[in-house]
Image (spheres, rainbow, N blue to C red):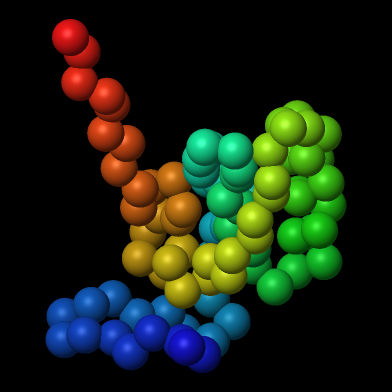
Length: 86
């Protein structure tokens, strides 16, 4: 998917308009980290930093620019469901 199709009433961005992107919106999963990637040279550095912080976990980067235009990113679109207590 090259880009998302805007829906009626959905805000759109103009070419060249700044978009705040952050690598801190990653998600910690069982055995891994899901890291937003933005097609920027800093993507690799962010993955290296997280690998040092979480040495036992696999770092998986996914394209996240289109998610970001919705106002959040990886962590924002996940929902944690805690295990039910006994």
